[in-house]
Amino acid sequence: MKTILSILVILLISRGIYGQQITIGAGTDSQLKPFDMWYGYSRSAAVYTASEIGDSKFILSLAWEVTTGAIEISPVKIYLNLVSNATLSSTSWSSITNGATLVYDGFVSFPVAGWKTIDIADFVYIGGVNAKNLLVLCESNYGENGAQSNSPYFSYSNTYALNQHEGWQEDYVIPTGDGVLDYYRPNIQINFLPLSSPNPPSGFIANATGTAQINLAWTKNAANNNVMVAFNTVNTFGTPAGNYVAGNSIAGGGTVIYNGAASSFSHNTGLNPAITYYYKAWSVLPPAPTYSTGASASATTLCVALTGFPDTTDFETQNFPPVCWSIEQKPWTRNGSVSAFGIGNGSIYADFLSYNIPGGSFFDLISPTLNLTGMSTPVVTFDHAYATFPGGLDSLELWNSTDNGVSYSFLTSWLGGLNGPLNTGGETYDPFVPLAYQWATKSATIPSGTNKIRFRGVSGYGNNLYLDNIIIGEPMVTWNGSMSGQWNDQFNWTPNGVPQIGQDVTIPPGTPFSPFIVTTGNFCKNLLIKSDASVTVVTGSELTVMSNVVIQNNATFTNDGLVKIKGNLINQNSN
Image 1 (cartoon, rainbow, N blue to C red):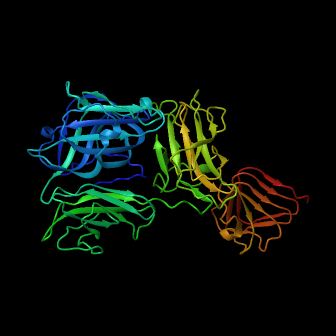
Image 2 (image 1 turned 30 degrees about the horizontal axis):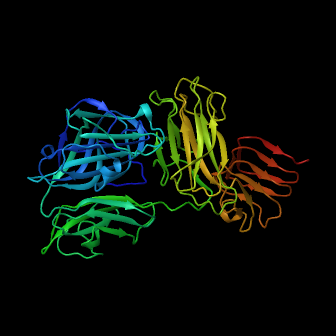
Image 3 (image 1 turned 45 degrees about the vertical axis):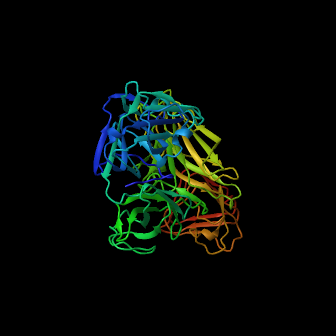
């Protein structure tokens, strides 16, 4: 089952064997290739001979043996090609990948030792008398100066004077020169099915290009048979029999979307944002017709840019990262038993304490695409908790992007350590787990033109940093009371939206209706009730103010329910 995902983080796991399996290489020595994350950008080319691979195969997945795991998350690409030469010559990466088939494009992690399988776009290998050799090309794009000493390692075998491996690596820039030849070819497992007639299409790949479009591409078999493609919203397909046209259903699962002689198709009808769609492609041998083994692919449509603000991400659900958020480099981890100020059931943390996290390591959390054009002064507000390990100095950085994540610019940072503004829990030798009172709130202005933000935790040998309740919106909301007295009606506020836990609230006088709070679960950061204005909390309802309440002269704050004030109550009434 081949999954080509360009926007989702894929943590690879060991899988059962697909059909049959061969292993090439038995060496036990270790090296960084083929997925070298020590450097910011690395490449690996390895050739495996026709005699090692054997008969014709429908290759479903590839596996590499990890000798030392690492939690790093990196974007990678994998290409396959059939070549005549059994050895390599020094050349550039652009030259060696020319004509190769892209079979994987996504994020990977190799956290533990052992064989790790990557599902690729199904690839047809033709064996026999005129068989060619298999060229496996792996591209890692960790970025910047890489993970350095915390890169995973992989087993390899010495090919003894045969240049069957070539490597490229650079920090900060993509390598453009010729690679370095060596004899250290990575061990590999090839999982496959035997080929049967007709041969299936090869390199079937799905790539989401928008919120409602997925482009499909494949290479037709040597007989140039037509190809039929079906899709489903679940990974279930029947076995085709008989003739089909677009729109027909296949018994057992799947709807045909294409049947013809082309080698690509754009699926752009009836798709919704942020949904995974599954595909199957068959070669069609006339006249009966006879169908090949199906090649599989899937892709997730892109997310719609956020336009409804304020937007709150509170990590209450178990799905992490949340839909349309992403993590890179070292992973943030969800904790389902800790939440900001003891309210709720979830938060995330960066494990700066772990012994195998080098100083300077990055933990990146990246927002969905944002459309902030409707806001005059957008800000991001978040809750945090942090204690340091004695002598440690971690930090949290905020970056923004104006090109949808292609590049980022530094905005600001908050230091940890014992005396930095991040610190809410002092110092400890033990893994820090915050109590309800060991939280604080920070905010920062988001510049005009921003369409993504990135939180970057930077390890300095300290302790755990927790984040919760990330709110993107205006820094202040003002009551307009234009619709009713209901606090929870978004149209009673300017800008429209019910106040969130990190937002300041102002209640002015003279509005058509004064606010009444009649439900539980209401929050704000600071509450200012201006002169001659009023707020009423009715019996059985609840309001939590995370900072201060200011009641100006001649203002009224009636509490018949439950009001929790985390900061100070400042009553300026003269009576």
